[in-house]
Length: 553
Image (cartoon, rainbow, N blue to C red; front, side, top):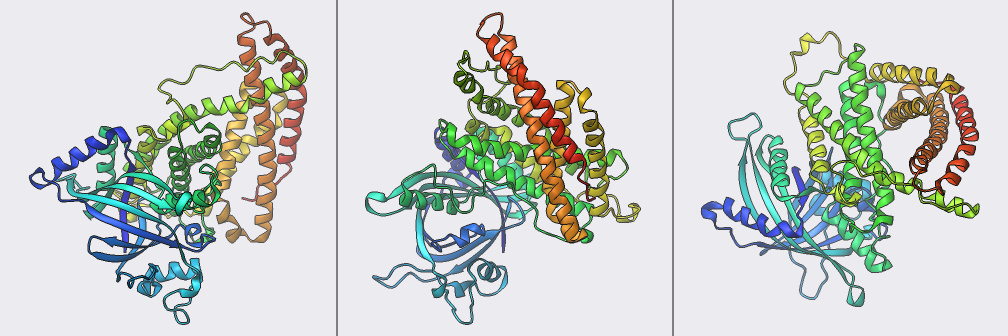
């Protein structure tokens, strides 16, 4: 079975208003008593289930006991879920799962893959090394709501308010974190009803989308209980690296399938780091910086994909997508641009912080790099940006695009010929690469503004190559894989050199802007100006090396 749901975090100050709204929506405005849910979560000590983005729990639901396996689905809204009734443990015996309850279907396949479970030799999984790592103690209040009545996206959703705590460790090492979550799950009708309901609650109560499961947060808590460092205890299911496509034969994919896979990878990258960032304290600047960097990179990848779609369409290779999918992708990319600018404000401060330290080492006036005013509407911190309505709306627009991919299309007979993923990607990448290469050959003639434009275009090329890289070796063989690796390495080196040049260009402009007010800025300007020529030479050499690497497509 697959569940279609979204989960939102509730600010503490909005909890009472959320409770009141649920009571208003209940029949006769009388909520039923909350259901007590007490669960134990199991995994191996090396977190093999968490690494597979799965969770195994045994939960008491009122008077009933249920064992559940949850595994990753195709994207943020979809998860595999297998619920099986079970029995309470015998008196005096610890709670333990029985894997045989999940025999057959996707649940068994997920357990076989993640735990190397052999049902014939080890029916209940006693040899899989499962141990209890953490527990939850919740009270759940549920109300059903009809959404979009009379529209194509009509549906019935369940609103489930979970209040309680996640618990890990024992004795002096016991740790707990509070839980305030609203889950919106599709009961019947169109999946868009879940998105529409979520958007309404976000706008009215300040909720934000969270793709981290209770298992993810419990894993963090269990590590904290052992290690004693809350901020260093990253769960096994969290990867600081960008999400990438699974290796697939490019020759077998249509262009629309490649677009969908790329968009799902962008969404996974964005939501993982957005959720991780939103879960940090607002003053956790050191912990937030690397997560915010990866979130911003995910936003750039989404924008690169959006530009690639528009560019290929303008050059006669349009995707066969619905108007809603196109509009939702455009809206998501516009939101991504705003968020990237906001995150760029904090990124610049971090990236330029080394300059005054270096000036001090050189016995020069260590004047901090002047800061620019924050962009209009900029939240107070990267954490606040991750919790913003804009960040959640971006994700909802991407989900809408994925749901609407095939809706409202013309009859298939009106399409002259299906566009292959290979043709779509090769045509667009060849054009992007050619534009960057022509500009790179004239690097000596480029001023700071045009050099920065080259960097932005080359970064978009890198983002698209990185996103779709797993698809190429299967289509072109070993030599293509090696050529891609050499080309990608040279492109990254060129981007690093261009990035260093741009950072110091920004710093020089900022110091020059305060020369009239602070004479100490002169020393910084002189030092940075002296560095420009060698930095440009380094960038030029890196670009020339990149130009010698053949583009495999």
